[in-house]
Image (cartoon, rainbow, N blue to C red):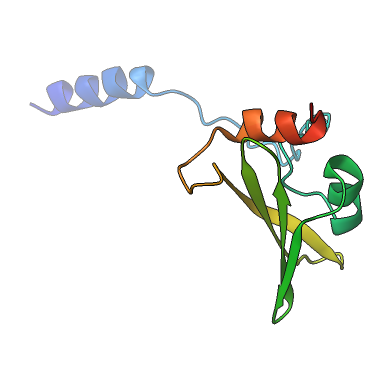
Length: 115
Protein backbone atom coordinates (compact mmCIF):
# COMPACT_ATOMS: atom_id res chain seq x y z
CA UNK A 1 0.00 0.00 0.00
CA UNK A 2 2.85 2.33 0.89
CA UNK A 3 4.54 1.65 -2.46
CA UNK A 4 1.32 2.39 -4.30
CA UNK A 5 0.97 5.75 -2.58
CA UNK A 6 4.64 6.59 -3.15
CA UNK A 7 4.46 5.55 -6.82
CA UNK A 8 1.28 7.58 -7.32
CA UNK A 9 2.90 10.65 -5.74
CA UNK A 10 5.98 10.36 -7.99
CA UNK A 11 3.79 9.84 -11.05
CA UNK A 12 1.60 12.87 -10.25
CA UNK A 13 4.61 15.10 -9.54
CA UNK A 14 6.00 14.27 -13.00
CA UNK A 15 2.78 15.62 -14.54
CA UNK A 16 3.03 18.98 -12.77
CA UNK A 17 4.52 21.87 -14.69
CA UNK A 18 7.37 23.90 -13.33
CA UNK A 19 6.35 27.35 -12.13
CA UNK A 20 7.22 30.03 -14.62
CA UNK A 21 9.08 33.07 -13.31
CA UNK A 22 6.92 36.14 -13.63
CA UNK A 23 8.50 38.88 -15.62
CA UNK A 24 7.78 42.31 -14.22
CA UNK A 25 8.39 43.96 -17.55
CA UNK A 26 5.70 46.50 -18.30
CA UNK A 27 4.13 46.06 -21.69
CA UNK A 28 4.41 49.06 -23.92
CA UNK A 29 1.43 49.79 -26.09
CA UNK A 30 2.46 51.08 -29.49
CA UNK A 31 1.36 54.62 -30.19
CA UNK A 32 -1.76 54.70 -32.32
CA UNK A 33 -2.19 57.50 -34.81
CA UNK A 34 -5.00 59.89 -33.91
CA UNK A 35 -7.91 59.20 -36.22
CA UNK A 36 -10.69 61.76 -36.01
CA UNK A 37 -14.15 60.38 -36.60
CA UNK A 38 -16.68 63.11 -36.90
CA UNK A 39 -16.49 66.16 -34.70
CA UNK A 40 -15.94 64.66 -31.24
CA UNK A 41 -12.96 66.23 -29.50
CA UNK A 42 -12.84 69.46 -31.50
CA UNK A 43 -12.58 72.77 -29.66
CA UNK A 44 -15.13 75.51 -30.36
CA UNK A 45 -12.72 77.38 -32.62
CA UNK A 46 -11.83 74.19 -34.54
CA UNK A 47 -15.52 73.37 -34.97
CA UNK A 48 -16.32 76.87 -36.23
CA UNK A 49 -13.31 76.72 -38.55
CA UNK A 50 -14.62 73.41 -39.87
CA UNK A 51 -18.33 74.23 -40.28
CA UNK A 52 -18.48 78.04 -40.30
CA UNK A 53 -20.31 80.34 -37.92
CA UNK A 54 -23.06 78.70 -35.87
CA UNK A 55 -26.66 79.79 -36.36
CA UNK A 56 -27.26 79.53 -32.63
CA UNK A 57 -25.09 79.48 -29.52
CA UNK A 58 -26.52 78.59 -26.11
CA UNK A 59 -24.47 78.71 -22.91
CA UNK A 60 -25.73 76.64 -19.99
CA UNK A 61 -23.54 76.56 -16.90
CA UNK A 62 -20.05 75.59 -18.03
CA UNK A 63 -21.23 73.97 -21.28
CA UNK A 64 -22.09 75.37 -24.70
CA UNK A 65 -24.38 74.16 -27.48
CA UNK A 66 -23.51 75.31 -31.00
CA UNK A 67 -26.11 74.79 -33.70
CA UNK A 68 -25.29 74.70 -37.40
CA UNK A 69 -28.04 74.74 -40.02
CA UNK A 70 -28.00 73.65 -43.62
CA UNK A 71 -30.72 73.09 -46.20
CA UNK A 72 -31.09 69.40 -45.41
CA UNK A 73 -30.10 69.15 -41.74
CA UNK A 74 -29.49 70.78 -38.39
CA UNK A 75 -26.43 69.82 -36.31
CA UNK A 76 -26.21 70.44 -32.56
CA UNK A 77 -22.72 70.15 -31.07
CA UNK A 78 -22.42 70.00 -27.29
CA UNK A 79 -19.15 71.25 -25.82
CA UNK A 80 -18.12 70.53 -22.24
CA UNK A 81 -15.00 71.39 -20.24
CA UNK A 82 -12.22 68.79 -20.46
CA UNK A 83 -9.31 68.02 -18.13
CA UNK A 84 -6.68 69.89 -20.18
CA UNK A 85 -8.82 73.03 -20.24
CA UNK A 86 -11.19 74.57 -22.70
CA UNK A 87 -14.43 73.32 -24.14
CA UNK A 88 -14.50 70.39 -26.54
CA UNK A 89 -17.25 68.61 -28.46
CA UNK A 90 -18.44 65.57 -26.51
CA UNK A 91 -21.76 64.88 -28.27
CA UNK A 92 -23.36 65.65 -31.63
CA UNK A 93 -27.01 65.36 -32.68
CA UNK A 94 -28.22 65.67 -36.27
CA UNK A 95 -31.76 65.98 -37.61
CA UNK A 96 -33.77 67.38 -40.49
CA UNK A 97 -35.25 70.87 -40.07
CA UNK A 98 -38.56 69.16 -39.24
CA UNK A 99 -36.93 67.18 -36.40
CA UNK A 100 -36.49 63.69 -37.92
CA UNK A 101 -33.16 61.95 -37.21
CA UNK A 102 -30.60 62.50 -39.97
CA UNK A 103 -27.39 60.62 -40.81
CA UNK A 104 -24.53 62.35 -38.97
CA UNK A 105 -21.86 61.83 -41.64
CA UNK A 106 -24.18 63.08 -44.39
CA UNK A 107 -25.12 66.13 -42.33
CA UNK A 108 -21.48 67.00 -41.63
CA UNK A 109 -20.65 66.59 -45.33
CA UNK A 110 -23.52 68.86 -46.36
CA UNK A 111 -22.43 71.54 -43.88
CA UNK A 112 -18.79 71.29 -44.95
CA UNK A 113 -19.69 71.69 -48.63
CA UNK A 114 -22.91 73.68 -48.91
CA UNK A 115 -24.26 73.82 -52.44
